[in-house]
Every structure is written in structure tokens, then in C-alpha cells.
Image (cartoon, rainbow, N blue to C red; front, side, top):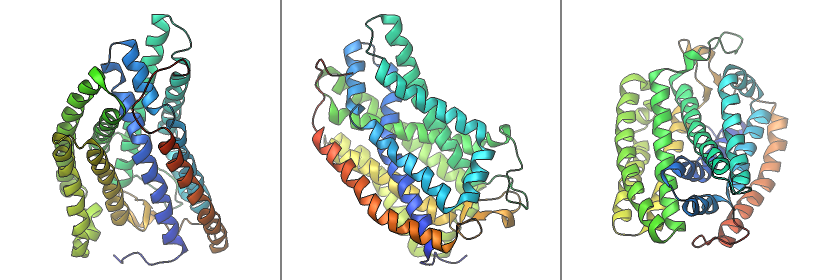
Length: 343
């Protein structure tokens, strides 16, 4: 196994990884807030939860759209295989994201209790289902899916629901709930703030348990996912960084340094994605049981000319997306206050 070389294919592998990491880090807390939504009982508290993410959730999802578009353009064979093989799963993900978005916009349009409760359930269910499906997809990419000699998916939907991908899905849900609870603590005050602090601590404990379980399962049953770290021992520094980031979350949270705890949660997601990408490379879709049929950054990529033109576009476009994201978070910084324009 060779270390990633610096060429157009590996650059695009990294860029797509950066886009998906940005989505997981930013929309992750949106999904986490949604998963916690039904734990609140009062209408005002639910409105505060919605308005904590209201100004930023749609901008966060831009990262997912951009990543999907980049995957289609840079690695069209991967896009075709994944979206055809995971068709039902992606339709469920799309429906979950749509219901979640519609719920945010429609929930407070009418005062009737049944109306708001319906959209509350839609918002929470869409958030949990989205988180679970994202995790299951990552788990299947790590575990491997059946691919034939033509590079096409040779399995079925039920075959994707193996114990390991479901474990990754559960871990993702808990991770996003922890991430969202800490973000909620940063954005709220009063009784809801105190509730979120308790929920956040419970989510931190649950995530640590899930992380340890997932790590053990990966080392025992998916040894190829850690092959590059074994080959290059210096990469263990990334494993150590991930462990320290996880350990620092409860430490900072216990001392009331909520912003640092949130940054540690972000660092946890970033280091997990880096480790996943490094150990997957050059595979974008690992083939199981025949690794020779895997779709890689080299056998499934667009032409070098296409990758080169796209790289120029990315160099121009990504800073614009970053600038937009930073400006929105700066404008809407601070605690949530309800007014007549709120959700």
C-alpha cells in the first residue's frame, strides 16, 4: 500500500473529502439539534431550538450539494455505482432532508397544536433518519460492498444493513446529537440552556461508549481500514489527536468552557474523517469480497483535462463558500432571541 501521491486524482480525492467533512461538521449539529427536538415539551423551547439553527442550516447543506456535484464531475463511475446501488437509501435520505427542511419552514405558520406537533415529529424523525443513513453509508464504504467486474453494484438494499454499518450509523447519530447539544448550549440561556447541558453530558458519555465499541469492532472485523496506519506508524499521531479531541470534550464542558468543547467536537469529526480517508485511499468504493473490483481515485476518474479545469473552478469557488459560511455565523452569533420574525 503506497502513500498518497500528489496528482490530480489524489487532489480531488482530498477535496471531496474536505467538502464531506465540512458538511458533517456543520450540518452535523443541525441534525443533532433536530434529534433532540422532541425532548423539549414547551412550544417556546422548541422554537428556540429551531431558531438556533434557522439562519445557518440551509447554508450548511450547500456543502453536501457541492460535494455531490464534485463527486459526479470528478469520479462519475463512483457516482453512478453508489447512487444506483444505494438508490433506496438515498431516496430515504432525500425524503428525510426534505421533510426536515419543510418542517423548519412550516412548523410555526399555524398556531394549532396538532399542526406544530406534526412538523415537530417530521423535523426530529428526518434529522435522526438522515444521521443514521449517512453513518450506514460510511459504514458500508468501510466494510465494502459487492461490485462486479464492470464496476456495478451487485447486491441489494437489505445487504447494506449489516451489523457493522448499522453500528457506524448509530455512532453517527450519537455523535451528531452530542455535537448539536453542545451547539445548543452555546446558543441558548435559562432553563433550556440548563436542560441542554444535561443532555449534552449524557450524549458525550453515550458517544464515548459508541466510539470505543466502534473502534474495537473496526480493528477486529474491518482490519483493512487501519492498514495505512499500521504501515506508516507516524500516522498514529492522527489517532492520538482524535483520542485527545474526544477526551477534551467532557473536560472543557465540565469546566464551563462550552466553546472549546464545541471546537473539540469539531476536531473529533475532522480527525475521524481524515483517518477514514487516509485508510481508504485510493479506494472510493471498496469491493467486498473481491477488492480487485474496487472503484478507486484512478480507475473511476474523469479525464485529466476535466480534473484540471475543475480544480481551477474549485480554487475560485471554495473560498467563496468559506467566506459566505464565516460571514453568516458572524452575523448570527450570540444567544437566540425570539421575535415576530422568528420561526
